[in-house]
Image (cartoon, rainbow, N blue to C red; front, side):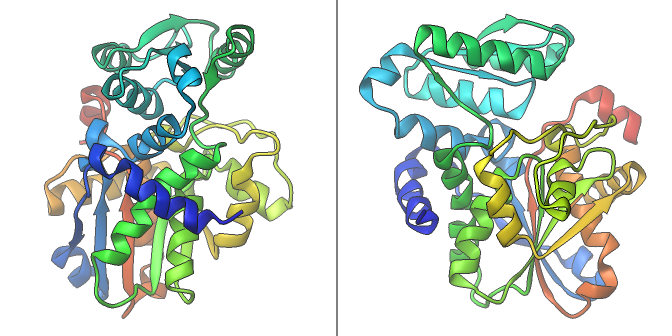
Length: 317
C-alpha cells in the first residue's frame, strides 16, 4: 500500500474544496514550555474539523454510478457534518443515521448542510449497524469515519501542508487518536519526508481503545467511559486498516485525564483566543504532560477541531 502516493493524489484532488489551514507558531506556549511549538489549525477548516478532507477524498474517488446512488454513514458529530458538507458541494445525496439521543445542535448542523437524518437505536453502534445494513440493501456506499483508505489519505493531506509550511523539520508531532484515521494519514506522509520525527498519539484515559489495542497487539473490545473528547471516543472496527498503520507509526502513547483536557482547553483559549473541542484539547493536554521530554524541541500539535457546544463551553469555564 503506497499511502504516500495516495496522499499526494488526494492533496491535488481536494485542494479546490478545502482550506489550507494555518500552521501557527505559538509564542506564549513556546515560552512557557521552553521549546518551539506550532499549532496546525484544523479548527478553522470548513465544518470546523479535519474530517472534511477525508470526506471529499472519498467522494471524489467514487464511480459515477456510486455517486448517483448517494452515500450513507452514521455519525453524531464531525464526520456527519463533513460528509454532509462535501456531499452538498458535489451535489450528492447523503443520509446519516443517528441514535435517538444525539445532540440537537449537531443534528441541526448536518440538516443545514443538506443531509437526511434518520434516527435509529440508543447509541452509535446501533445506528452504524443499521446504516451498514441499509447500504448493502440499497447498494449505496457506506463511508466510515476512519476505516477507509481514501478517508485516511484525505486526512494525510494535513501532513503535506505541514511539510510545506515550515523550513526546518519538526522533532515531534502530537496527534489525538480515536479510530486512527487522522494520525495514520498524517504520520504516513510526515515520516516519508522526515524519517526522524517522533510521533506521539494521545487519547483520553476514559476512551483509548486504539492505544490499548496497540499495546495488546490486537484490536480490543473495550467499554468507554464518558469523555469531553467525544471526537476520539468509541471503539475500533475489527480488521480496521488503521490498526496496523498506528502500530507502525506511533512512537509513544500518552493518556490524559478529563481535568488535563479541560485545563488545556482553557489555557489554549486564553492564550490563542480560539475555540477548541475536546479532541483538540487532548493533544494540547499531551503537550503539557510531556513538557519535560519536549524541552528544547521543535514540536507540532494538530488542533483537530473547534466544534464545542455552548453548554460544554459553559461547563468548562
